[in-house]
Structure formats: C-alpha cells, structure tokens
Image (cartoon, rainbow, N blue to C red; front, top):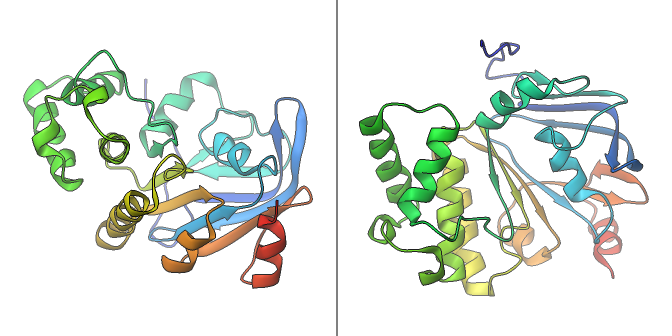
Length: 244
C-alpha cells in the first residue's frame, strides 16, 4: 500500500490546525485551535492539568479524532483520516512519553529492533546500523544490551528519545518528557532535545508545566487555558495558566 501524503516543502508547516476543536473522548476540551509548527521550530504547549495539552498531541498522532476544523500533520490530513493511514503518519512523527513506555521484557537493542520491524524495516544489517546510530546520538551505545530495569530514569528517557529518532522524523512530540526526572537529569534531556532540534532541524513540540524549562531553553509557547490554546509570550498570562 502506498503512503498517500500531501507533498510539503521546507517553508510549509509540519503541523497545521485552523479553527480545530480538540476532543478528549466525547468532550471538547479546546475550541478553535490555530497552530502552525514549521521545520526547525521548538514549541512548548503549557497549562494546568486538564486543560487539553495532551489531547492536542494525541490529535496530532491520530489517537484522538478531529471532527471540526482543519488539521494536517506531516502531510496527512486529520479530519476523516482512515485507520490504515495512521501508521504512515506515525512513522513521520517521533513520540516521547513521560513514562518511557519501553518493553520491560527485552533489551534496549531489542526494544529498538521491535520498532523498526513494526514500521517495515526488513534488512537486518540496515536495522542494526540504524540502532547503533540512534544510540550514539543519545550517548547510550554502551547500554545496548541492558534491560530497561537496569537503567536510571534519565537513561530510559534517552532510550525513548533514541526510539523516537529511528525513522528520521521531521517532528518529535514529547509529552512531559521530564515529568518523572530530577532537575539535573531533566536538564540533560532538554540539552539532548535542543541539540537534536538545532543540529538536525527536527521540529519539537513539547508539553510541559515546568516553567524553568521554557525559561532556560527558549521556544514558542502555546498556553492552554479556559478551553483555548493560544500562542503567547505574555508572562502574566503564562503565570495564570500555570497557577494551580
């Protein structure tokens, strides 16, 4: 089956929402989302728990349906996207979760091999080479034969980032990737993500509620508040949005 996507150029957005209503289950949590993410962007989505941050990124990867408005990610239109198209969308998007989501019954290397097989890699030599490359990118080559439980939280997150890089995505979506890490380890993860962004031009969309992160590592900021999500650089608005 062919990957039927719209062709995009460097000047076109990787992510585009216009007047999009974002759902969580059957409930609308954000009305009228307007957002564009371009190659090389570093974008934060911030706000309190329950304001729709994670629902936006679930919509980006086809996990939540988009029924109203316009949405397109990496050339795939989200309204009416068919189940058989979603795997092609997800091959173009790397996803990093707060809880790592590694397979605990297999080694680091086998975790990465599992993803490559699931996304259509059939040449074992090519797959092994790509695994070595991404582990080198995140400084974890020496941990290839370890089991996940033998790694620290920061090391597990580095493996999760390596996993997100396997198919050379144009876009990485990170959902609270430092939420379970101490400050020093979190800083290392942000240095890694910003390095990927700056060196490779990979766009990053990161959900966080940690103001220290986006004050130290600058990017565009979208604030989720009162059933809206809007780009904002107003400190007072960000303060209100993050106040618990």
